[in-house]
Image (tube, rainbow, N blue to C red; front, side, top):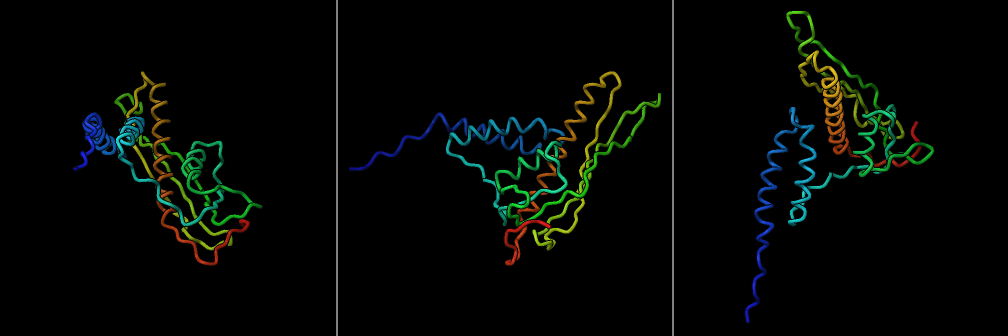
Length: 204
């Protein structure tokens, strides 16, 4: 006697196809101006795909498990973003707890550069730029990532009649740049391989 084939999930099929189309559209925006409005849509789409048995690729593992952050205050947006992104992957510790690697943020700077003026001499166009310099070493001081400079920027048009809205937009753009910068750091950390002698110890 033949066993009946399981009935297809007809309700999920169209929803899954629509979700995949939305996911493709959303991810196409990342890295451009639409990146900061795309993430909420991405979260809802991922949830729908998960309900249909579709799984997104998880975060890559790190070659170490205990990391110390230096020069990144937890009270700053950049510090919060770094801790959020790293917290689910490695254990963030401070001496005297054992440490394997030390991530040092040597500098981080927001810049606003005027690139266009109106005929009245008012600012019309700006470039918002974020500069960051970081390095990674073992707790014993062996350099794993040489001091590295990262620079990201976005254009912003201004309007003196909507100064408050533009100020909010400016802050949101800087937050997007900081998130993108953190993801660039994470990708570099994922490629790090600890030397055999690098056991966990207190950072110097």
